[in-house]
Length: 470
Image (tube, rainbow, N blue to C red; front, side, top):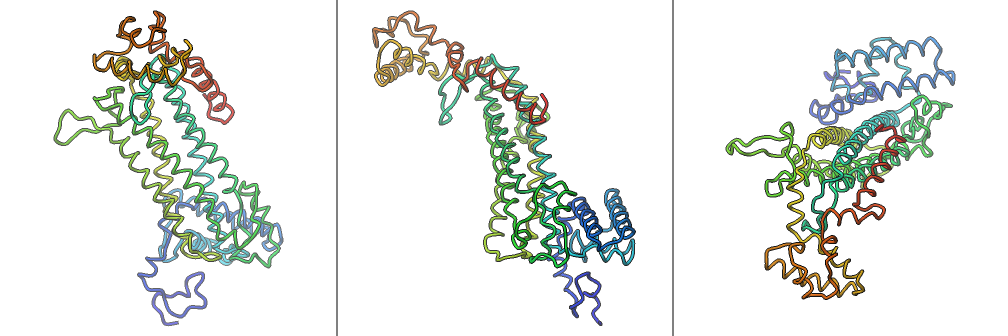
């Protein structure tokens, strides 16, 4: 061998004479991303060597040396003293070469019956399962915060919107709880997706399975997975589980973005429904009066980033023949970037929500601006025996009349209203009261106080059962 950058020194380099170009090594390495999977890689390797000892391929002494060496390497990485080498391409080769350097020849037995194909598939599944548990923890904390804030604002009312136009008065608590239910669905989606994440692929080897009498169920049990692969070719090439998680992440970030959009609107002085916490705002470099909702805006903006990661992986996968292809290396950066975005967004959303100050009087004033009691009046007329479509038309006429006078329906006199419909009586003013309009909607899932309290009770019970203690 005469090459200066000797491929024969690589763990896979036996059949090569020429060295990889430095630029090729730079282009193909993945260690800058997959080094973050080192704990999962070592956990999988320890499970693998335990299985090799169980089936008689390793002696007890060899097993102990391998486990001791792997744990020393993990400790070095934890302390930041481990030297990552791009020339060794990835987390697997870095750890394996370091193990050989540390414990000698027995380290070369680590990879018996295993390929990087099934090894990396296990690492990613383990990393994602741990990652999702962190997301769930933060989601539960965010849901709990929505419930807590809603519980303190059951008597606040604000305009409910359709088409971003004032529609009907609703309880602020009811509005906030809508987000709690959204994020509850996110937790449920993640739980469902985890059943397809927690499937051990180790034992599939490169693509065809192994000639060794491996015990995949033992490895799965060691790493805490309830299932093993059914088809070795599918096991090493499947990234559907990542697509599911990236989809779940996209929905989570979309829900966060919707909430941020409301905060941005509510903090605008034209709405003036909330005081934005200064810890989550920034100023202007030129306009001294500004308090910009930058955290909410960035969280809204990062939604495109998360969507992009899902689309990127879909595009990577769309043309891949069976089985493993190096294209799959691109999944690490996408999932790591998504994890960083989702985790921080959930933490910040919780903190921002907890510090929001709601302006009760301003919300009530806004309710009185948009004829939000018009539906109440229509329902009142229906109760008097008028068909709904006729009632709808009559109230529309009254709204137009009040609008020209620049007053609310509740400000019209009884005589004025009776000019439009003789079935309107003094009791109409109780119907037009905004607080009472909210209270009348006691139907299950409605905005009335009893319904809101039932929602809070149901969410608290679910949090308790799920482990997100209240």
